Image 1 (cartoon, rainbow, N blue to C red):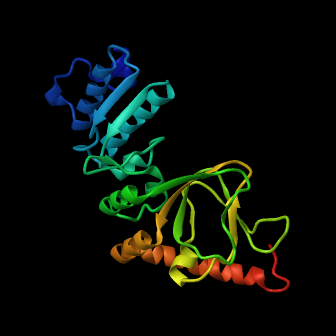
Image 2 (image 1 turned 180 degrees about the vertical axis):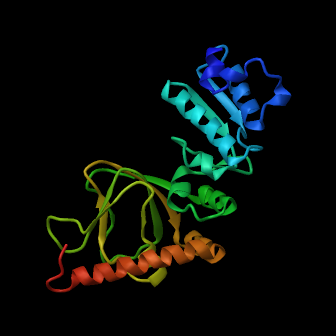
Length: 236
C-alpha cells in the first residue's frame, strides 16, 4: 500500500487492471518493481504508449526515486524524457556514441555521430599547455569533454574567451582555410579534448547541412569578435 500511494494509486488498490488507464498501469508496474527495494531499476520504454500527462506521472516517480538514492536506467526514444535525466548515453547500431561528440555536435544524426566516434582522437592537455598556437596551421576540430580551454589574442594577462564542456574550437580556421587567429591553451586544470581530423570534419559538414549552418554561424561571429579585439582600442 505504501508503494501504491507513492506512485499515486492508493485509491485504486482494489481496482482491476482493466479499470486503470495505461499510465496508471505503468505506475503499478513501477510499484511492483520496487517491492524488493532494489538499488537499480531498469525501464524499457516506460513512456512509449502513454499520453503526455501519464508520461509525466511516470517521469516524476522516477525523479523521486532517484532523489531517494535509486539508480534508474531507462531505454527510450523520447527526447522529453532524456532532457530530464542526469546522464544520457546514445546508442547507434549497438555502439555507444562518444559523449564528447554527442555533447558538442547534437545536430548530427546518430549515423554521423557514430562515424565521428570511430575517428575521434582523445587527447589530454595539462594546465596552461598550448593546444593551438596563433599563426600556425589548424588541422583539427576540437571538442571539449572536460576542463576548460582559454583563447588568447595579444593581451598578456587576460584571455579573450573561456570554453568549457560541450563547446568547441578550430572551426573558424577549418572553414576559412586560414592559420590560427588566436592561441588556445588549457586553463588552470587539465582539459580533455576530442579531436576530428580536417578531412572528417569536412565530410561531416558536407553530409550534415544543419550542422554546417550552425557551425558556420558560430565561426562568423568568432571571426568578427576576434577582428574587433585585434584593432587598436579593442576592449575585452
